[in-house]
Structure formats: structure tokens, C-alpha cells
Image 1 (cartoon, one colour):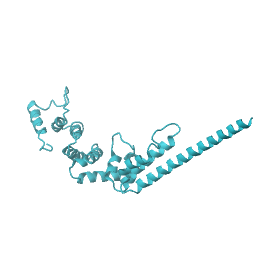
Image 2: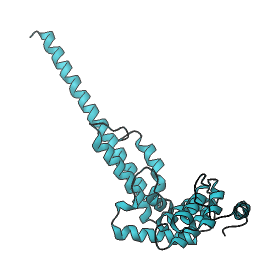
Image 3: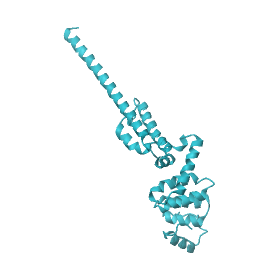
Image 4: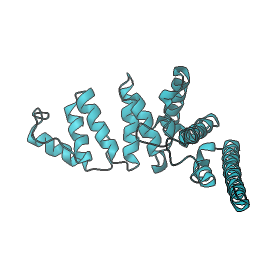
Length: 232
């Protein structure tokens, strides 16, 4: 090997070593920034409300998953879940609602991921908060998630009360839930029809309401359009 070839080999190896060192340093810096952002969020009065700031601080770290980055992606998801549970432990109502949210959400943690005794305790807290909360638009999700927990229980009447409160806040989907309860669970066709009208979703082409006369239906339609009437 000539002297020039040796120098080129040394330069190449040096470049590779520098590149590896730089990559390692960058990874360590990202990891440190991630842990700093995590701790900052956990130390906040409501860690759940720090989710957006946490995501902004760590950027794309662990966001784009691949076969080589699964551990980092998993770590990111674990920490986001941790911020939810930490928020719940500190009394965060938004975090509690997120935990019981039955829809598609991120982070994906649910009350069903917790031990049974813990999920039951938190479920009772959610229901208690909903029952005592003022009927305002901000509490619509609280009413809904608490009602969802009660819908198939022996406390259907409580679920109805909470769905009604949600409807009073202007949540249109609450009418559909009430129609379902009265129709499918309680078999109360009169109230079911009333709430189907409010949901603008009266079943067509079925025998569900053959027990109601045309006059009764017109009366129920009139009542359903009276916003001062909460329920019948």
C-alpha cells in the first residue's frame, strides 16, 4: 500500500469515527432533552395539560416508528401515558376524562389498563364530579363519559340524567344516546320517539313505533322541538 493510499485510509477511518461519535452525541443529546421534557411535565401542576409542550420540546423523537426505532417509539408512548396517569393522580379532570374516553384517542391509555380497584375508584370519582358539575358547555365531555359508564348498569336513570345534561349543553349526540336507552334498554317507545326526533334520526320503515298513533307522534314532535322542555 502506497503512502497516499495509507493516508486516504487513515482519513476515511477518521471520518467514520467522527461520524459515529457525532451520531452518538446527537442521540445522547436527544435522549437527555427527552428526559428533561418528561420531568418538567411531571413536575407541573397538571402533567396532562403539558402534553402539547412536551411534544413540542422533543420534536420528532420517537415519533416515526421503524424496525430500528421501536424502543424509542415505545418509550415516547409510555411517557405520554404516564403524563395522563400523573395528571389523574394530581386531580386533573381533563386527564380523568381522557382516561375514560371510549373513542379513538392518543395517548391510548384507558381506565381498563389499570387494576380493577383503581379503575372502579376513578370511575366513581368521574361520576361524582359529573353529578355535581354545572350544566355548561365545558362539562359536556364529563357528562358523556360518566353516562357511558352507567348506561348498561343498574343505574340507568343516572345515565339518563347525565345524558340530558349533556344535551342541555348543546351536545347533539346526547339525544341519540337517550333515544337508544329508551328504545333498546327500557323499551319506552314514547320517550324513545321523543329523543329520536331531537336527534333528527327517527327510524324509517320499521315497526318500532307502530304502537304510537299519528296524533301521538305529532304531539311528541311538538314537544321535542320545545327547547324549554328538558324531558318527558
